[in-house]
Length: 278
Ligand code: ZN
Ligand code: FE
Image (cartoon, rainbow, N blue to C red; front, side):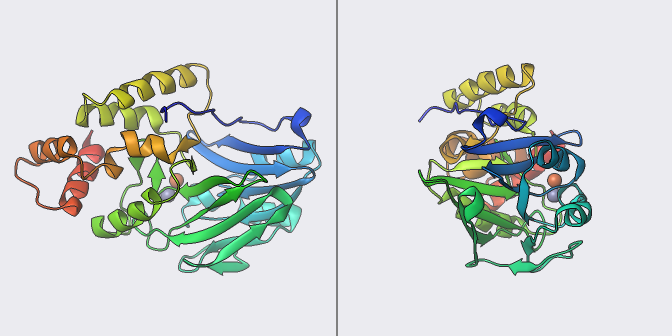
């Protein structure tokens, strides 16, 4: 599959009211608040701000069926209290984190059914960025399109920083995501794609898929469009953090570390440090 994909819209399209809409609502400087809308219904993932979500809900008279949270950071939960006051929507979130509100505490193996917007989701524990971070994966709509809401765990050509977890935990978490269906739409919470790709090209300068992705993403950003969702296949082809078994990546990481690296965890930890300092 090519590394190119249809970007999400950044705003609700009233002409598509009866269809399914996946919307990357921009917030702060580089966050996306993901919304899924269908008919009169909507859900939101990680509303760090309430206002941009409320604008869409009010303008188009949509009912907010659910608020899904992946982890406790302010840029993911800052709008929760205001959205509850405005809509009464139930909040789903990680079992192990302190949140402004949460009606249903979730852990790996739990599922979330949101029939109003055609989502059937399962929960994965993906610690690393935070200790209790969860991801939601499943299918969207009658076509059963595989979809993933991964918060700050997996980014386009990157991954989250390790604020509360170990490299070993993050490798386990990313491996779970890497094993999902390759057609999965990857809905990450930040537009970090160009800076991640710039670094990925330093790691793997000879990767043609990576160079193609850089050109495609640059074009989208020049038009102020999101580079997301990505697809899992595109991440498998270009994201260094999912490619730690590749000989070229191991060699580049060993060069950066100035010593041989004997296991995927050491390669991952070196890549993470490299990206932090890039
Ligand atoms: Zn975060
Ligand atoms: Fe974040």
